Image (tube, rainbow, N blue to C red; front, side):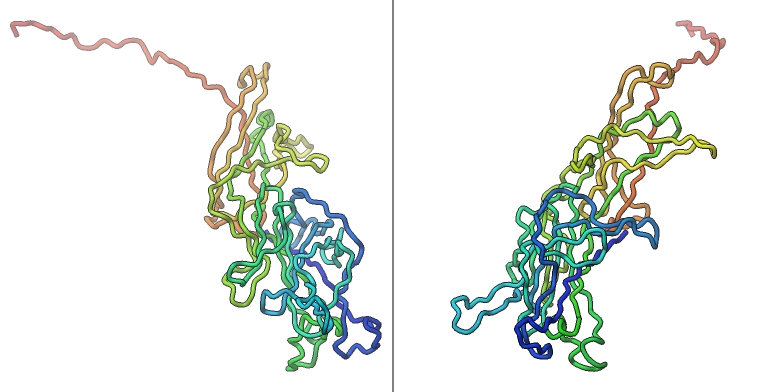
Amino acid sequence: MTYAAAMMLAACASTDDNGSGNTDKDETIAILTSQNSQSVITRGVGTVGGVMRNSTEIIPNKWNGEQLRIIMTEHGSMDLARNYPEIGATNTTGDIVYGGTTFTAPKGVSTGVASSNDGKMKYYPMQGLFDFWGYYTDDAADDPSPVLSEDGKYYYVPFAINGSQDLMTATTIAPDSTLLGPEGSADRANYYSAYAARRGVQPNLLFSHKLTRIQFSLVPWSKKDTLMQVTKIVLKSHTTGKLVVAYDQQATVRQTAVFDNTGLKALNVRNRQNGELSDTLAWQHPVWADSLHGDSALVTNIGEAIMVEPRQKYDVIISYRQPPVADDPNHIAEAKTLQWETEMWLPSGEAFKEGYSYNVIIKVYRLMPIKLYATLLQFWQSGEDINMDPDN
């Protein structure tokens, strides 16, 4: 299942940006974002945005103040956009506009203006076209600054996930080009730029998920099976790699999470309590509902959704515990634990996909004692007599 959220970097002209009062010339144009300084919070915050409930409904699909990173490059290349100083200045390399700059996403909306954490206003270079890129790594990257590949064709960020982080990337979508010029006009291709900003054309970054999201849930086979407790769920996945966040026209890679083939690691499905993650699932029971309409088994989520490498299948280990039930002859007299190791794959045979969320329903059965019965089939039957004579 898919989810995409948009972050808008509004770019507009202001008649007093350089005091000229003329917005048709190549003046300095502000890249308008909220300029309030923000504090950065890093932790495994879990799923960002909403999850599809059906083909049309996403619940909830809103930003919640996540820390985003923004890159601005010259159009079609990996050269970072720069504002160059006046002739004669000591700084001849220019000032990078956005080179992995931290922004804070809005709260409570799916599309809105992001806030730059340093509170600084940035401006479009006076000439040229530019590309914008975004990414989100939560706390999966020790250093979320972008790294240029050896061939200079893409930027990436090394990461190490533990199942609680949502990795996302973004690039701009084509704007309403009618604002830039009449049909057939070459001006329609003049985005994103100071020229486009003066005409109200704004870069809109569309964020998409790069991992597979899996939500485990429980359902009892019968009402008595609600006694069983699931104490731990482990899923195996690759965990390290590089998140490709920007690329030029010659690159063979696109925005995706490229995992290292260094062996699978066991990741625990974790429980979040008061905002903190714990490996303890609180010995969660499956639930049975008694109602006026009759008894029914309820599908109950267990733990927080885990986000992992998209794979063809996963190795899963599920640990159970059954408490003692003294008055039930079908149950054992003391607590017992066991685990079930299995492979998990899709019924369709397809691979698990990035940006999709999957519900895994575990049917829970109570432990049944092994009772061996010995039955005497019937009384001995009389067989033939055998005479053994050495002379015959």
